[in-house]
Image (cartoon, rainbow, N blue to C red; front, side):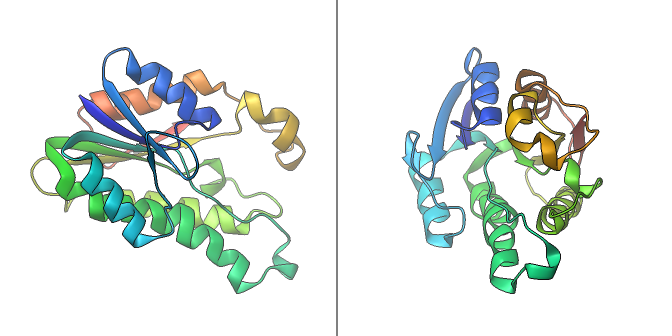
Length: 199
């Protein structure tokens, strides 16, 4: 399969690339690195990416920015970071990417544990992740031509514990290579409309 992977240089993205590249052609895209450049918050940029890479068999996104900070100090502009980048960015990938996929192709997005397990300073992340999961379950019943869509929701990565651990008190971690298996399951499997929780 020819797979477009957005966010291939992040911690999860690297693990997913390693997991899939042994059996598939993986084309990478990112804001600053990869085979192609894309800004998920820019509709024209996402459309241009799909035109450049298509036709393809699968789209995988492990990218998306969020805002973390106290709700009492948060502005609408800060909250909009997560809406425009991680939420609408991945929605844009679906809207522009679905016509680029071959029949029976798949889309795999990324949410996160905060969608169901809120933490302090994480209101933006919780809202965005929960919205992504809702979007995927609804989109699955409307996609044409046998296209499938799923979302992977990982908990805190073991590799990120030193950086983000203080914000996730008491959370167990998972290694990125175990998270990558959920993306493989989504791409190579047969299910659609699923939230794959890796906890």
